[in-house]
Length: 255
Image (cartoon, rainbow, N blue to C red; front, side, top):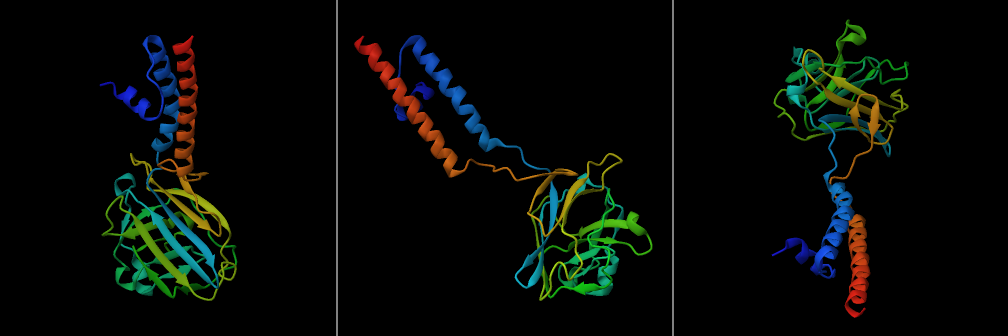
């Protein structure tokens, strides 16, 4: 059985004879391939997104994405300073962000950023603790005394490579401005070089969420499957072609 003819018949498209059938088949395949491609869009590489947002009277930091341990060169084991603090906190001027519950501090692996960056407006002086924090222990820090060359990304040592990251921390009754955070999007990478491709890290402060593909090149997410409206357009298109072909078939039959 000709599967293509069976499918086209189900769509109301008549089976024509000889060359007409092949022309019809080629025309439909050519029209359908671009639409099928909508469901096969390439996905972004492993990437981690830190998002700082004003939610009502609170500042909420969420971390999402995935991290590929094998793609980044690990430099220093242990996240030492969070263990001393004992709670999730933000130090804007260093910068230093440590998120998770206190039991996870000190149990992390560290990877060096490939770029230097700041998250503040240059006037912040004090660190601030979060009221609540949960999820994967994750963050970034600047080791005291090393300057911007000591900027590191860290993640819990028990994190399984390429698994979903979901971390949330809330600081009550404050604003991004009060914390002296600068509205910006930073597209960064960690642990590249010496044969390592690196991982993409994005820090978004008071900005729309984006997914980085290459450092410095933000793009919006691409749907992995066609939207319902796309399916509807596909069906309408096939139906219209079926109606045209039926009229052609009638002309051929009664000429």
